[in-house]
Length: 279
Image 1 (cartoon, rainbow, N blue to C red):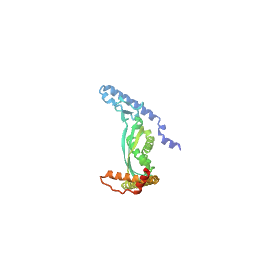
Image 2 (cartoon, one colour):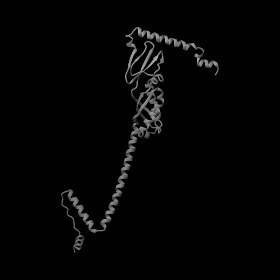
Image 3 (cartoon, one colour):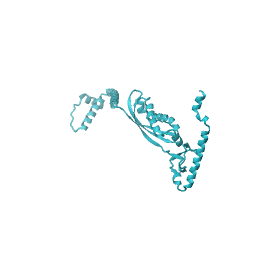
Image 4 (tube, one colour):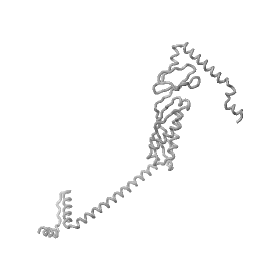
């Protein structure tokens, strides 16, 4: 880089008196402003005294330069007419809805996702001097971050891991907004809307899975019942009288359900067995 290029980058080096002249002009204007305030006192208090609320701060510029000492407030503060300007900054938590974003997921499914972002300005001076519009910039960044983060996730992850995704979006938002004096407090994925044909396909899949589980459960019940019947048959087979008693118990249960007369034959072998047991 030659000398001419250096001079084009820093042209103030060949004009050392320019900064001195601007400083003299600033001092003269400041003195004249003080004289104006004194001459018009107490009417000038209406224009010089300003108030900011507990949740607000005022960033003051004097002749276009930021005043030392940082933002003023809360309460009363003093400005000089004609040479001072200020901007109020709200430090309360602000929430806004991220408009629904059409996102192509990792497994090539198109979904519409919207979210809610909560943020606050923690440094009023940085939010005024480092970015033109901190609120609007945060909103635009939230939209692009939501698309970028969800584009790397599959549909099942978006539906089941909302808390993890919210923390990831918050971390990605908090890093670039920190130089703006903005802190992202919380991000919530509010709604995930699926296409109608995909909803029908997922409903059919869930219904088929439930039917398959129901058939498996019914088959397991039949198997357990058959085992129980087998064990009962083995017990009854050891004693012939048990079968007759079971027969009578069944007839008693039938007659209890409906008032009816039941005629049944009594086997002779049962009588002979009872007689033998009595003798």
